[in-house]
Length: 60
Image (cartoon, rainbow, N blue to C red; front, top):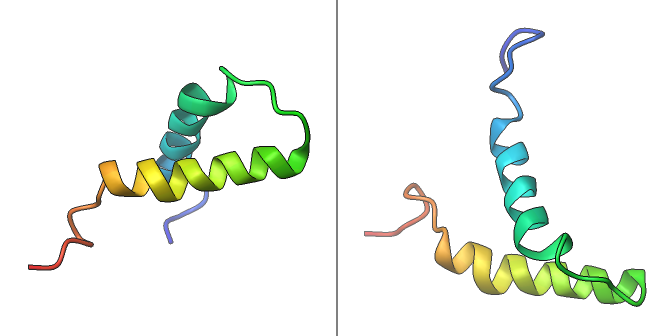
């Protein structure tokens, strides 16, 4: 962890949530919370993790 006030601590999380919001949330109206949770899960596991693989995760 870095010192208090260091703006780079949450940059990865903020980038992910910006991508999620722009790609999925802002363009849809969900009927209820359960459908929203399912759609977000499908997006993360089906598209985000498959298309945006982190270089440290790739096995050689």
